[in-house]
Image 1 (cartoon, helix red, strand yellow):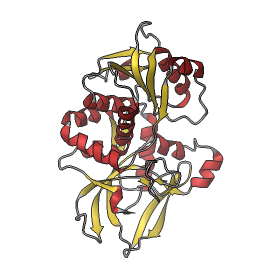
Image 2 (tube, helix red, strand yellow; image 1 turned 135 degrees about the vertical axis):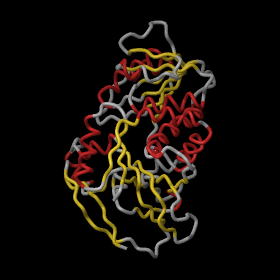
Image 3 (tube, rainbow, N blue to C red; image 1 turned 180 degrees about the vertical axis):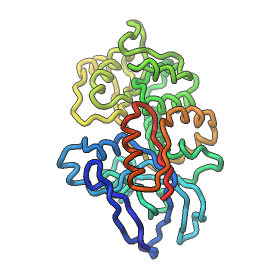
Image 4 (cartoon, one colour; image 1 turned 90 degrees about the vertical axis):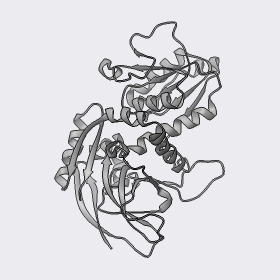
Length: 341
C-alpha cells in the first residue's frame, strides 16, 4: 500500500514523500484526524536544534501528539472507525526495572523516525489506546503531553514522602497548567500553589489554592514538594527558587526540558536532604491512566480546553506551514491541526 508522508527536510521546508506499507505485517492502519504541535516540533521546524542533530534527524515527519481513526487491523482487535490515541514511544525490548520510556533502545516518533504527519500511520496494536465516546477531540489530540504529566505524578506518588500538606508548581505555561489540573484532580486535599511570571497566565489557575509571582514570593512560604515545569533558560532560577522554598527532605520533580546544562545549588540539596528526580515522556500505562482520568473527571477535560490556543484545518503543505507559523506566534496554548488529508 502506497502512503504519503509529509517530511521536514530542512527548517521551514516540508516535502511530500512516499512510503510503502506492507499489509502482511500485523500492524494497525490509522488515519490521523487531529494533530497537536509541540515545542519539540517547533524546534525542528525553526531549526533551533544543533546543526549536527538536524543533519542526523532530517528528513523526518514531525508530530508526536495525535489521535486518529482505525482503518484496518489484520488481527481484528480494532474495528474500522474506532477512535484511538497513538503512543509515540516505541520500545524494542522489555526490562523488569526500567520503564519503556527510559530504555535507551526505545525509539520515539518525530525524534529519530517518522511522526504522525502522514496520510496513514502503520502502528503496533500495543501503541494504541481507545478513546471514550464523546471526548473533546481537540483535547484528546494532546493526550501525549497530558500523559507526560500523569507519568510524573505517578512517580511523585512513589517517591515523595507522605507529608503532603502543600505542593508547589513552578511554571505558568502549558506543561505547568496541565500538571496542575491533574494534580488537583488526583490529590484534592493537598494545597496547591502555582509560581509564575505572567499575571494573565496565573489568573487561569482558578482551581489552585493560591498563585504567586516569582518576583514576590512571601518569605515565610514553604512547600513540602515541588514540580519544575519551566525548562529552557528559566530552569536554573526555577530550580534554585524551589530549593529555597521547599521543606527539608522534600522531593523536586523536574519536567522542564533545557538544551544547555543547568547550574543548581547542590549545597542546599545536601543540607536539606532533598530528593530530585526527572521525568520524561511516557508509556502505555500512562496513556491508559490519562484516558481513565478523562472519563472519571470530566471537569478535567473542561479545564484542559482552556489551553487550546488555535485550530486550523489542514489539507495542503501550505496549510501545514501556516499551522506552524500560527503556533510560533502564540505564546500560550496548543495549536491543533484538523488533519483532512
